Length: 107
Image (cartoon, rainbow, N blue to C red; front, side, top):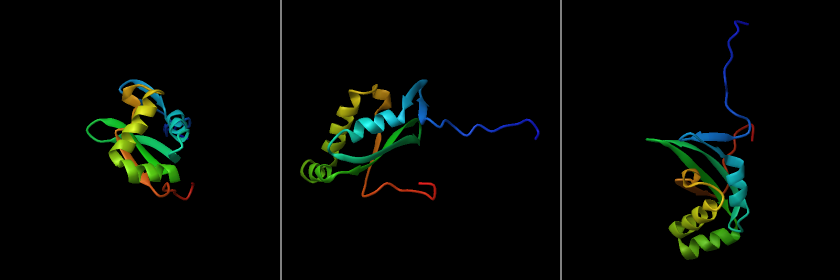
């Protein structure tokens, strides 16, 4: 060994945006506490500046709300709910509604 090591990232899924630490699992649990959300996964989206993105699988009630209220109204309600749990900086800017979460070989 040559004494070097490589940092691969945090195991606890805490990310840093604009000098603030954000717990992704805490936000995911807050979303999944809603009857509309079956599964949630958050991550950092790198565009002009880093922000959070949310991948969501809606429950039957969530699909019903999507059909009746529309996507914009649904994501606004999700943002409103999350705003009770975090700062504005930690609210996802991108929302993707999926039938199932994508998985790789490791799950």
